Length: 380
Ligand code: NAD
Ligand code: TYD
Image (cartoon, rainbow, N blue to C red; front, side, top):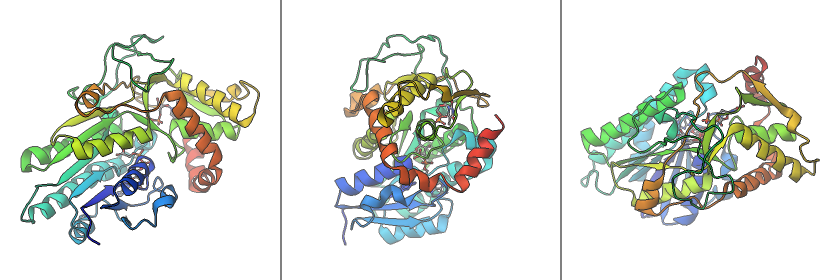
C-alpha cells in the first residue's frame, strides 16, 4: 500500500506512546504508523488492542539501541517522520539503576538520530520533508522553589484546565529558555538526550523538534507512578506511600491532551524549536492523594473518607525535586493549543478507567511487579 507518510513512533506500547499511536492511526488513515517498541516491563500491547488490526498500523519489537535494525526498518518503510517516546521513565527506578537509563535514554536516542541522519542523507531529497520529533520532560529544568506553600492565584491567563483549585506554589515557572539543571539520573539522561537532538540540528541540519511536558496522567499508565499506583492501592486497601511530607508540587496534564499537542507540533511546529507543554495545573501530592481517595471511595460506594487511614508517610525520595511548573503559553500563543479537560474531570475519567479495567491492572501487577513493589517499598 502506498501511504502519504511513513512514521515510526518509538515507545508506542507505553503509556503516552499508546495514546499517540491510537490518535495517529485513527486520525490519519493515509499515514503508515510503525510502532517500534522493545516491550520492556513498561510496554504492553494490550494498550493497543483496539487498533492492532488497522491496515495502517505495524508493530515491530526492537531496541532503539540496535542501530542496524532501526536503519533497516527506516529503509524498508521509507520512513519520513520519527516521533520518539521510547525511554526508561520512572525516577525511582533510575535511582536504583542509572546505567539502564543512560543506555536507553542517551545511547538509544543517539542511535536513533544517527540511523535517521544516515538514511535521510542517502536520499536525493535528503532532509526535505523529514521530521525527528523528540518527546522530553519538564524534569530536565530541575526543581523550582515552593515559595507559596499555601498556593496563590497564578499570574497566567486561565485555560480550560483551570478549576476551582487554580493555584501556583511559587513565582517561577519553567520556560523554553530555562537553563537545564537535572537532578535525578532519569532527568540527567533525558537532558543528555535533548542535547544530542539539538546537536544533530545544529551540526548536521537535521529537522528536529523537542518538547518538554509536565506530569501526565490517564488510562494505561504503569502502576508504579503516583496516580495509578494509588488508585490500585486504595482499591486493594494497601498502604499509600507518601514520600516526605507530601508537599511536593507537580503540574498535571491529561495524557490525551499531551497526545493532541504532539499531533499539532509534529505537523505545525517550527523545526529547531522547543515547546513546553503543561496544564497550568499545579497540585501538591497530598492534595491529589485526597482527591483520589475521595473519588475511589465514592465510586466504590465506600463511606466518605474510608480510605484516608491508608495514607502512610515514608522516607523521602533521594534528591526529590520540590516543584515543577511549566509555562506553556508559547504553545498556546503560537499554535493555539490548550488543555481540553479540567483536572477534576480528568481524574474522574481516570479513576473510572482503572476501576473498570481491573483485568488490565491484574495482568501487569502479578509476578515481577509484585517482586519489584515489595523490594521498592518494604524497607521504608
Ligand atoms: P513508559 O515507561 O510508560 O513507556 C516507555 C515505552 O518505551 C515502553 O513501551 C517501553 O517498552 C519502551 N522502551 C523502553 N526502552 C526501549 C528500548 N530500548 N527500545 C524500544 N522501546 C523501549 O513511558 P511514558 O510515561 O509513556 O513516557 C514516554 C515518553 O514521554 C518518555 O520519553 C518520557 O521521558 C516522556 N515524558 C513522560 C511524562 C510522564 O508523565 N509520563 C511526562 C513528560 C515526558
Ligand atoms: P511520579 O508519578 O513518580 O512522577 P515524577 O517523579 O516523575 O514527578 O511521582 C509524582 C510525585 O509523587 C513525586 O513528587 C513523587 C511522589 N510519589 C509519592 O509520594 N509516592 C509514591 O509512591 C510515588 C510513586 C510518587
